[in-house]
Structure formats: structure tokens, C-alpha cells
Image (spheres, rainbow, N blue to C red):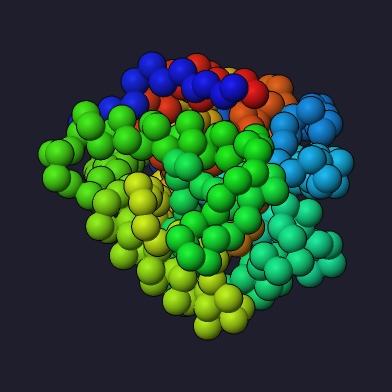
Length: 357
């Protein structure tokens, strides 16, 4: 039985932190300060941490049957390998003297992880999917700007139960036994419904997630949660698109559906830039900065497929450099940052997503 402890899932309005006005200094003082800062940062961001598969617990969402567990769990070894390669690069980035340069080099490091994920998809089958459901390799290179937003189901998702069968008469998946994937989506479906109950009118079927940008000191609209008619309309469109692409569309379009939808292009770009700035300005061992960047990155996917693994590897490497220890990525970090509000994730980062199966 799965359970998830949500200490606070409501987010009335995130409040970006106010910035302190800069102190005016002479050019000589600035040169000395930058020289000292570069020396200090270089000593703080060392590359002595190592990574193992234990730093990358397999997401429950990836565990969709018993047969593929070994191969799915083996992906953690590859993620650890890439994080080890990436660590010197992000450590060097964080040691640079200016915020702009740090953000620029961190962005280049992130792009390198994107290329790794794309190359891996081209050479390795994704064990999470059956032969008919496996996404085309091209999906890892197609941007959301090119092909529209991502729509992800929450709640009771029948196709993720082991042994479930598609019932053509009812248009629903029936039977089967629960898997870690089906259980975790059910748990986060409850969290989404709780947010609707607290933050919206009873008739509302859309909940736009307000995201505070702590450095830029402004708000953007991130992911949107959908229920009711809005969710069913999305399901009908997805069924039509999958039917065109694959010739068959076994998509549930009726019932109590829930979806989380990615933000628009401008908001995603703003969230990504802010994540790089947050990390570039963070002090040593600043876990709140790391979590802030994680939340922003999950509000800012660039491609149709591959963003989750990219985020995990990047966050592990930059976390080791920034925090002085290689972090263990919560298996549900993607769902908690996509579904929960920013205040809930930032206030209780180690408690708001405890899941046992």
C-alpha cells in the first residue's frame, strides 16, 4: 500500500525573495573582490564526491511490471557514470568569478546532459515501455515549441496496472494488479485533488501553478493541473493524435481524469534561466537553492522526452559541487515538482513526498 505525506500542498501565492540593493564599490575594490571571490569559490567547489546507483533511486513511475525491473533499475548506473563525468565541469562553472559566466557554463553543462540522453535513446531500448508503446527516438529531439505541451496523467491510470487489458466496449483499461507506477500516480492524483479543493472554486477545472522567481523577483505561470471537462477534452485530443501516429489509441477519455500540462514557452524559458541564476548565486551547502533550482527545472522541460533523466543527472552533479555531498535524488522528484505547489516543496523538501510501497 502506498502513502504520501503532504504537510502542505496548497500554494496561495509564492512570494519571491526580495533582493538587497548592491553596495557601490570602486573599480579597484571590485577587482580585488572578484579575485578573492574566485579564489574562495574555487576552494569551495571541489570534485571529490563520487556517485553510485544509490544516488539515483529508480522512480516508482518507471516500475511498470516485474519483468523489466532489472533493466530499468540498471539505468541508475549509467546516470551515476554521467554525473561523475559532469561533476568537474559544473564545479569549474561554480568557481567562475561572475554570476553571468557561471550561469552560462552551467547552461552548457546542462546541454551536454541533454545530448547524452538523446544519444542514449538512439542506442538503447527504454525498458519502461513495451514494443508498441515505446516512443520514437526523434521524440527526444523534438521541442515543446515544435510539437506542443506535454500532458501527463495523474490519478488512477489503468494502463499502468500489470496485466491490465483494454476494453473496447467501455474505452477503459480493466483488471490487472497495481504496480509502483500505478500507485504513485494515484497518490499524486490525490495531491492534485487536494490542491483543487483548497485553492480553487468547486466548479474550476484548471489550476494554474504560480511560480515565484527568487532572483528576478516576479511571478510566472508554470504547469497547469486539469480535471473535469478540461481533462476529458485533452484526453480526446491525445487519443486522436496517437491514433494518427500509431494507428491505435488506447486512451481513456471518460471518467474522473486528471492531467498536468507543461507551461507555455515564455514561462519555461524564464524558469530555466532562473534555475541557472539561482545555482550561480548560491552559497556553499545551500540546500534551499538546490531545491529551488530543481523545482524550476521541472517547470521548464525543453523536449518532448528525456527531461526527467537530464534533470536528475544535472541536479546530482551540481548538488555534489554545491552541497559538498552527492545528493540522493528522491525517486518522485519529478512528480512532486510538477504537481505540488512551490511553497509546499520548498517548505518541506524532505517530507512532502515520502512514499513507501
